[in-house]
Image (cartoon, rainbow, N blue to C red; front, side, top):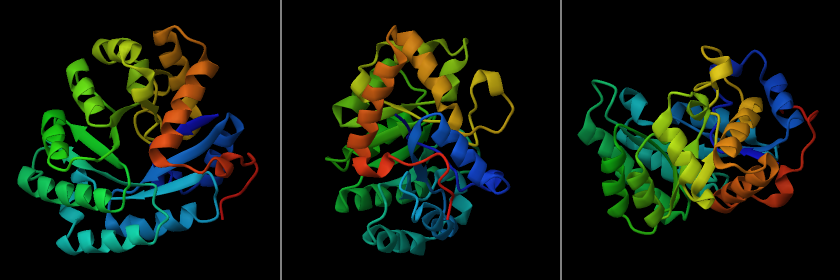
Length: 266
């Protein structure tokens, strides 16, 4: 059983063949996907996509890269959406200090409020932290008792240890398959397995064999193979351990992940 802890299956890149993409993922053993939203306008479509699909789980949030689309009232709306009870996490939220023009103080305002909501609803957070791991850790320490994952982690071993100390996991995807990603590959080889999640971030961040192409959740197996090789352990053992991490973090109902590869999207 594989669990894609971060996939944007609701993205327009999948509009033409979403049924086929989901069927391919199920056929290779991807039995659950966590789908984080990036802006308020995307929440209704994401909810419709996940409704009735026992292996698709929504998360609602406001992504820092879409800062120009967010409004203060969206935070109030987020509270209402979370109260409906279908979300398995708050996110994708966080900080991006790499892209120019994204006001850091405004990013922090949206991020901290989403952290407060995660604490209030006892939900994990799915965090985007690009060139912002230290700042992210500082925000997390302001609201003790949170849990979650730093998606597409690219920080240092020390930063990974700091995150583990406050209850956070790190998400690993396509970048780990690139031979030149030495720091990431060394970290993945040595970090405690209970701190890892696997993800595709589809349609983005494909593995090296699909560089420049649209990514999709069926390629999660390639990530499993790479991480297992780096750690020197059987793929099935690694997949079982890391799937257990995802089930525990997001509190995924075990009975919901036994679906057929032929089940259509409703």
